[in-house]
Image (cartoon, rainbow, N blue to C red; front, top):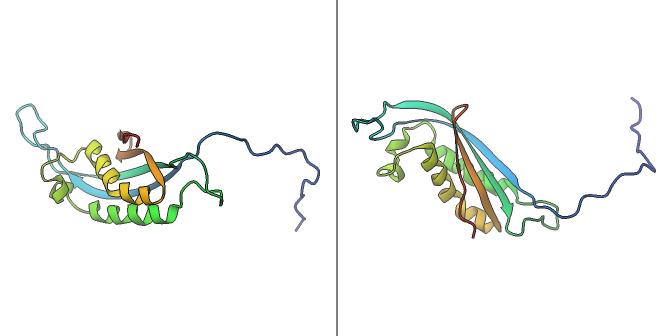
Length: 148
């Protein structure tokens, strides 16, 4: 096997200064839902299922990196996200108590993920920039939390 070139003496530019960093954690879940009073006559939409995808875009409060060179640690964020995915997966979302009086639209599901992750992100000294929920391919709802 040939030795890799070290490119000794090559003119490499330094890392760029400035800018902000973001990381994304994502997951997939399979569940059913229906929208209440969906049709003009006030009737409900039929129960149907989706393969959903959720993406959480996050950053440090200061937008930078830790001394270790990371924006936020993926591990605790994925642990919390996976807990939420287990709760909402393989069920009818309408049956969850959180959705007893809230229509389980992709928009409201995005807000549900925000509420479920908010404290973990705060403890990580981070903030959620946006929460995307894909209701199958081609349909995406995006929730932009208020800063602060």
